[in-house]
Length: 625
Ligand code: ADP
Ligand code: MG
Ligand code: ZN
Image (cartoon, rainbow, N blue to C red; front, side):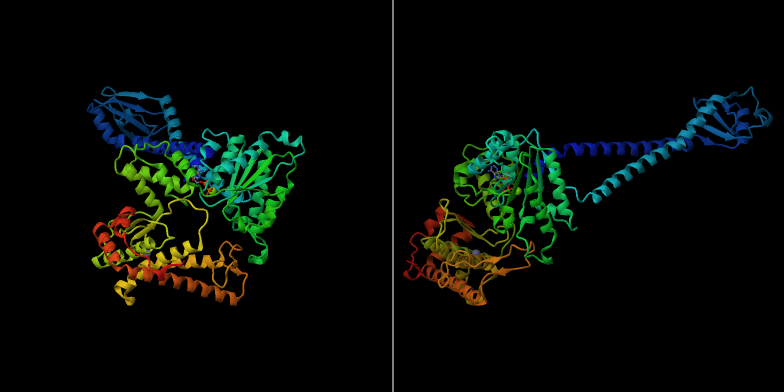
């Protein structure tokens, strides 16, 4: 969304021209219509043709004011009495006068009109030619625009880079909250672009490529644009996926074209967004390793090597998958500088929220600090989304300013999807959901290393039956094995509550996403975090980085190890289920109380959960330490 709005300025020029064309086209069509209308009006609707015998009779009866005889034409125009223009016409042999035909010249005025005749000939010629001209012009325009498209088809090899620069609403670092370190690193790039001589005089080589690495939505694209904005240089932006076309060689020629354009506009910045689309490790993909991506990547490397010192074009690239990039991209002289961008911490989240709420009318009681506190893990884009949703919700509620409730609703909507209040549940589904959610909440509440319950609801939200929501009280850099185990146990708490209350054969599909989440977490613990029992402190790489469509999975471990991994995952899940079962069985009365409260109120917040579950106990058997 934002990207689009940023693009508008650069496209202005083009779209103006296109608008102009459209207007000319519309005017032509209107003219054409008018001509048709006018000529049809003259020839058919207004002037009636009558037989010459009738003319003679009527003329002799004195019904006509005048008759105009045209030279060299067999047409005569008649103006009846009481009318002030020609309304009738007739045809007669031009060599025979009206007198000869029996018209009494004293009863009617006879005019001869050699001139008017000639002008009317011209007029009629114009009348018949004008539509042709206009049609020709319309055809010409249609052909021309079709040709334009044809040109586009022929210009595949041209880069589609968009040029930004010197725009009124260009972005500078001040518009980006947080990311202090990234900005600091990029500040250097700004210096290189602004004062190249300063560095050259000391023999320093200016870096050619800077790689921005960070999760999606953390402002990489924004930072790149702001760097150009700060340095006040043109900014060529292209996305890695745009290089990848169906024709081999197109990507490479686009790269060539892009770099040629950039060199002409130096000093400037080339920005390759999502470079992982072309920059993945080479040589092990399908198609013998000589696929399109590889050629494109090679061309990028060739172009970057080809920069001469003092050329002053800096290539910025962004990715959220630095691990899959080809090492050749990261060599000195290429993208040897890396700028890491992380998810914002609490302080930065507040700053980002302030930026995005800046132009929106906020009620005095809105607490952005509290919102920042509970949005751990949100990216800048998510926070921008919360701000926007707040405004939308406030508008839909016809509020004059955004209230705390609007902000809370927006936050929940972004975090777990919109409420589906009008999805009606029958009583038994409602009870099952209430037990299920109460199970999550109870286990999470009792286990000591779980985050506290933030909210429980049995109102369907974004695809789920209900939600039990845990929010960490503060940002944390690391998670421990014990915390993960409590997350696994509370995640299974819903299914186990169903099993205990309804019976093992009556468990429902409501636990589907819980189980999937638990399996994924358990696998991550074993494979990536070295948290297995037998496989402690080892990681097992599955490389899915070769192909964009992930057809190839390469694993760097044996089948025997794969089997042990599966066993490790199974035992983690079993342990979690057992702990959840122990906790719920020991606190059945609390489970019931929470279920009743949920059926009655549908949504319960953290304070009330704590009140209802006050006194629930942690059995020794469920303890890990
Ligand atoms: P990325 O390229 O890393 O995926 P973008 O640069 O496209 O992220 O950011 C998406 C949107 O998120 C931006 O348009 C902006 O509205 C918001 N955003 C992200 N990070 C920040 C930030 N640090 N400060 C202000 N807004 C931000
Ligand atoms: Mg981006
Ligand atoms: Zn659940």
